[in-house]
Amino acid sequence: MRVTVFIMLGLLGAVSVWGDEKLPVLKAGNDVYSNVTVLTITTTDVYFTYNDGKGMANAKLKSLNPELQKHFHYNPVKAGETEQRQALANAEYHKEIVNAPVVSPPDESRPRSPAVAHAPDSSWSADFPQALAQAKADGKMVLLDFTGSDWCGWCIKFDHDVLSTAQFTAYARNKLELVLVDFPRAKPQSNALKQANRELAKRYNVNGFPTFVLVDYAGNELGRQVGYGKGDPGIFISELEKFSRR
Image (tube, rainbow, N blue to C red; front, top):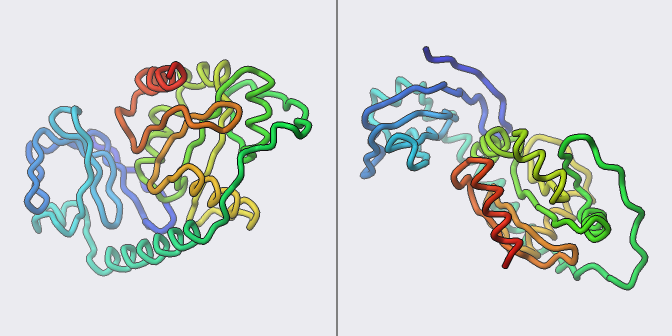
């Protein structure tokens, strides 16, 4: 049975999550996908797996045939307005990244802040220097999650499928300090936090979301995953372990 849930995701507008709706074929422009399972519908895009879950993709609703456009309630006027807002927001974001000052590595000669108490479950901080200090004190690594938490469909799905699972929570509690580097479009942030996040994106050359960057306590990159990947907590943890052994 198909279940539809409506969520507000910033600039994307109303989003429909179509639970396990399957299509034998989905054609988008010149691309043809078989054995499709629809995951999410936004004002502009359809997100799905294909080949029985072996691949993941998204396609513009405007590239679908009229029947599917009608089925997914495609509104070209609203889609055009959303795409225009997205383009303006992306242009402003890249402009700010280019103009942001370069961040120097942390000064290891300065006294460290005292260790902070850990939450019972994995918790995400926005304080990167403090996370580095805590990682050094506890012998951990730091995972940075570059995300658009209120508009990026794949970010939201990865958070649900991987970062919010008990398996990842248990792993992070023992191995990681977690830093959320968020670029929301509706959620309020202080100017200081916006600037800090822009500087981190420039420092680690992040150009898309989600991007996960694993670093040591000195801020040196150990490895990264760009995009949703396999969307499996066990596979993600295995990748982090490979990065840490390099």
